[in-house]
Image 1 (cartoon, helix red, strand yellow):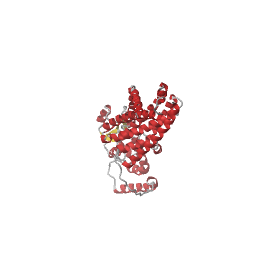
Image 2 (image 1 turned 180 degrees about the vertical axis):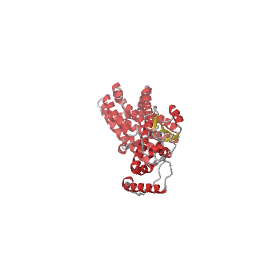
Image 3 (image 1 turned 90 degrees about the vertical axis):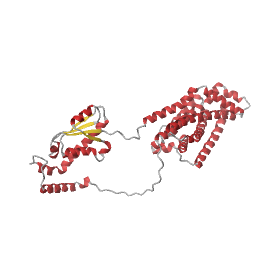
Image 4 (image 1 turned 120 degrees about the horizontal axis):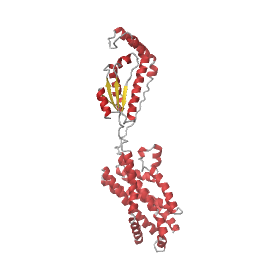
Length: 410
């Protein structure tokens, strides 16, 4: 037992003499996680809406309807419309306070009713590119709607207004009746195109109580932690090659202690480093996200157990390689895909369904889900005990395989 302790102390001293390596193992995941958080920090927020100023110089019913078309219905969800006079609108556009300014010229009502050429003036903000384009597309849709409305009801309106000097003159009851009948006949002919049959779908679902929504920033904490665990486990596993090149393993084989004791010492040292790293990342993350610190001990313990399992897994890969360079390449070829699939870069909820299904079955993805359950109170003692049993059994099997391979390496 003294040999195991001495071997662990020896490895810990060697790791402490390389503090830069420890900083890189923890700093790299934190830096990547911070960049990802900055990148996706505004995804959950509503997209910006174009700010449209409308100056109605005509002052008639048609201009008012045009303004309402932009400020009501579905257009209201992606357009912010504000009425202003032309002078004020141009001054505000000069200060860059809006995305576009729409000027309705005098005589617009009469030109629309008589289907005569007219021009709407749209002034766009040159400092913006996408938002003024949205306003322009919406305006083109309104113009197209007026065009097709004239194709349906235009002849009757043209006939009534042909001899009128002012389109606002009162219509007789006979005129209104004739227009209504003609428009009704036109609409009946186009009914099958304008009003297709409506299919009503009735469904009944048993609504299960939904779980409390978790902040996406909190879901990134387990991913960042497991990224750090994979980094640490991969680098710690390569230490066996350095000790082989230094002759430490050969000298240890000449002592009465067994290879199992030597491997147990290395495992104990790796467990201490991994537990310390998990404790640092979890403490910083939980304080930043204001999670209850009462969950810190159990979360750190589970993370350390998962990290030790990764260490033994990568140690087996290193021991089956022909040299240190080959072992490092093989380990990196496994670590990077595990990070991508296992939820370290992107949470499972944001992945495609097929990719998330694969990721949850990876070792780090499965362990990451267990940590999420611990942090967010969605696991029971029975399921956690089963998970711990699986991890301990995996560690025993991987330790026995590593010990057998280490004897051959020495």
